[in-house]
Image (cartoon, rainbow, N blue to C red):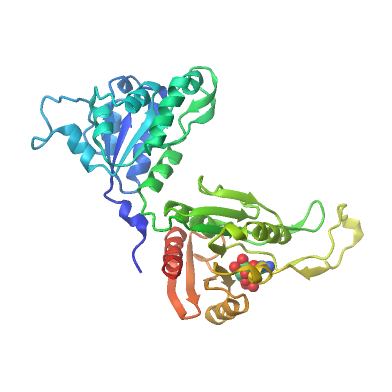
Length: 404
Ligand code: C5P
């Protein structure tokens, strides 16, 4: 099994081009986010950007000299044509923020400063993050320029809507640095799951007893979210069916929120046909109230028991529609991990099962790490001990990819 593709990001080179808009104040946080992934960030600033953020700030955070001049007086190190050297070494050219003016220059091949020369010379993927006044953004000239770039294969991260620095409301706000870093990361990843569609269920289900109370479990959706993020980074199309959770899934995932086991079953049934792989990471309730009481059960009602019935087993119900889809289940167990997981693998007609220990610290619900094993019909594929859920997600995907 290969390493996590994410490890490859260390040492990748990203040129961050900063152009002259107010959102340039967010550029230092973009540098920090990229650096935290081990990425080597080279900042190139246009003249106008220096009104909004200083080269010293970006130099300090990137740990590299900031490039500003097309004709530097003393080229750093051995002589090289700076814009070509930077353009050639880049794994990604990220322009954040990108002004209307800079987008226009890129669209029309104008190369009159260091950054625009790099944009023309590089063969690396390019991600442009427009940020400007809403009227400038919606102007036909900007729309057409963005269209030109998109048709050339440039990635465009659409601006967010909201209150703009100029006082107007609308589209034009630079997305938050985390979002820009996430998009950059996605472009830099190996796309070994391109063309694959994953349907992932996540989180707990909530089974209502009355309008106030419900039965649920300790699942937080963390393992499922790690799988959604990792699969998207590696180029898969990802749809999520999630029970109630207190988290956001990766921005590129298509998310369907449900509440109960019954709703999750319906959503899985409705979305299964488009999927190559189903990963049932959700902790679906095994027992649900026999009846839902439309009015709150009062203290004085002296309730002594709750009538429960089994919930529909989603995997068993959809088994007839499996065809050549790859089904992965999860098993949360306190003991007899291997035996219980093997039984579930067989009984539910799964291709693979991930069994994790619960009820201890450092593994299972809500924890950042997990311990357990991955099983297929062929036997145990992997044992993992307190492995970060993000790393485990990539390992699970490696096994899925090998078997598709
Ligand atoms: O039987 P158990 O709940 O331990 O099985 C776990 C696996 O089965 C998980 O993948 C879970 O998402 C799935 N499951 C299901 N329908 C249920 C309960 C669990 O598909 N009602």
